[in-house]
Length: 410
Image 1 (cartoon, rainbow, N blue to C red):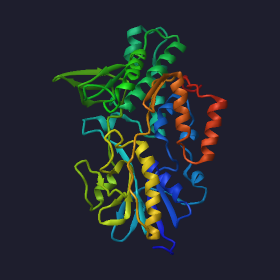
Image 2 (image 1 turned 120 degrees about the horizontal axis):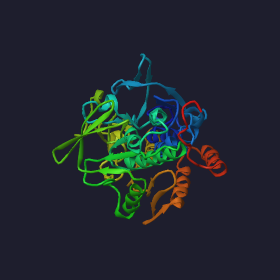
Image 3 (image 1 turned 30 degrees about the vertical axis):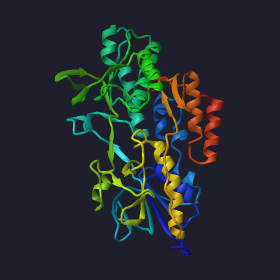
Image 4 (image 1 turned 180 degrees about the horizontal axis):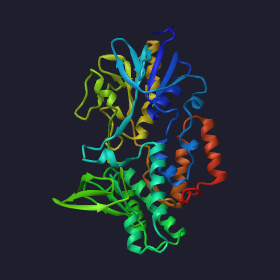
């Protein structure tokens, strides 16, 4: 395709899709398709919940980021015709391509648990975070000023399903927010936040260096930890758990589900090879087997040389985007494509509204200093230099203090 103006269509505006589009700007006719008009820096969605960051910090508009160097279409892709090289959007519009970059991401995996999809709150978008924050505020507003401590605790019982990094970050943020709100409103008692994990320990993929900080933070924020525990059922106001074949029902004011993801349902419609988890096996060049004009990355791609600790993470998609853009350019120009070994860039875990833990260069720092280091680290990974500059200035000059759970209407 060298010498022609190739049509490059990118499906998905997450880390894989957006950063590939930014690197390909000016190479052929690039069109990014995303179901939202903004990119979302998901590693800081927890800070958005707590009010430490604003929406524009972590969810910049895709058109603003692309600056006219690539086209943008807000829409939902419901089919891909690999033979006809077209992408069809809901509503009937079709977009043709010479090269397809496929990175539609993943969705929450409720694992078929009765009531989970209907009643549990997922945590993957700004809307999810807004919904959860409003739920916590509504529950607080219903508690009477003279309520007994045990009544306050019962009313403020929230369960987080999933004990990975997401569950730890979310539960400690919620505990800090709720405890602060109880103090501000002069209520008696304290909130109850519970984390449920099927494995025998939380954050099973993390090293022992950082685990001590995680465990200390959970103890300090008084988050209850249930391991070796399976969710049996979720209702509008309860969750049923199974531990050692003994079932327990907890009354709750909310259940948040961060217990894993599954590939975008769009993959199911593609007549291509899938592995047992529904992922698309890709070549070391990120190309589909037998479809050299199609590249896949991120949550939906199985890359054989990736360490398990990196699979499904934002930092993997971030790294893959550079290789993908490089190889799309080489494919168009008829040059040799490359492969790459992806490495862990370090771990950074938010632990409430005042602390964090950061592992980099084999060393771990914790506490308020680590929280600031985490902000600095993620500033460098935001898209485009001008957005990084604006956000960094905002965090430096305006601060990153959490926003209290004020009564609705204030």
